[in-house]
Length: 488
Image 1: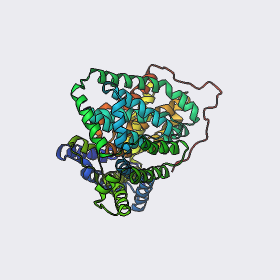
Image 2: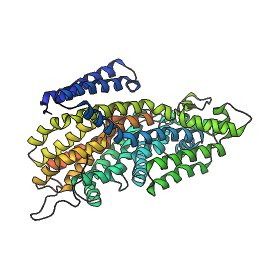
Image 3: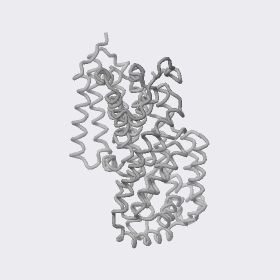
Image 4: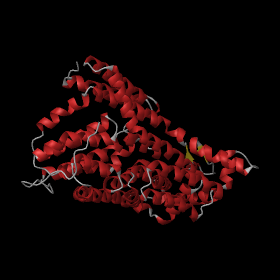
């Protein structure tokens, strides 16, 4: 017979995980290459032993593991395709062209501000932070490096803008999921989010503007022309290359699902490489005579493996290398390990046991919203998935918000401000692991500079404690705009 765990028993695997992860940071240079994965699996094993002692059968634990891994499969497939897209966009000259022309039109002092704005516009149009970061984000990072700006700061600006669109775009999956969990409609949810989103983004833009204006880029100005000359001498930087990202963004806006969209973008990159970059094709393939054979080898290599375009400038060489699908395998391993841990913890109700006291002691509006934010962050850390961090707290707190007389959009906004925004700040979360790998910047390195993601949960708590724009149920008013959503 299944028994309920004590609070200490439920939290013990998490404490062990924290100790292991902290040790990995101290002892290993690259924690993504295996140490964090093993830490998650060891913590999952401990949670499994506890679950069995509580009366949960091995079959139930295994089914939950398979279920949680299954929920992460779309993210894993997208991640693999992003690796391929990065490869073909590199050999086609799309990313180098973005860097080349970007250095022409973007002022160094305004670059960080511009990076946030551009990423925001693209992510609102596509509804996807992942696609935005994998395309325009990679190019912006290259521009930032050429300007001599710390890559962690640049990554923070890109992520801030990308997650702005992920949060408010009606095309975003999380923007649709949060109101469904809370019991309101999509556009009520989006309109209500603007109260906290606008000040959060305003502060973010001011901070990045201040960083840019206070920095000295004199030493980088000479390097800019060198980088441009090197790129132009290596690639055919034809403006027609911009058709590739334009077509991809158009496909996404037309609501084509992410997997076929990214595959289309990958194949377009390969086609444009064959058409516009014959020298790169020959260099990558090592085949000089048979261009058909060289094209096949180069495009395939770009999609699955390491690509390094060699120039006379070492700084440029660092910008012109990708690792295709193969480079994403450590991240896939991390996501799978995190899903195993989350599945085992959920099989015996250990995660719910930890959050029960939080719900019980949340009395005021401010403490209830703060508790919801904390719960969302907790699930981002333990379940390693932003969807779980929205779905489970949404189900947990929906009745409580209603009993406190709060409209469902208060809950949906809180879920979005915390669950969606903080997922990318956790190294083993699907979002944090992916963006760290795509940008090549450690999660803990860019996290302090992802100002929009850091400010958003604080802003929603502040509004609640100050009772600003907190919508309350009028007596006799219907609270649910949509029916209850059943989530297994």
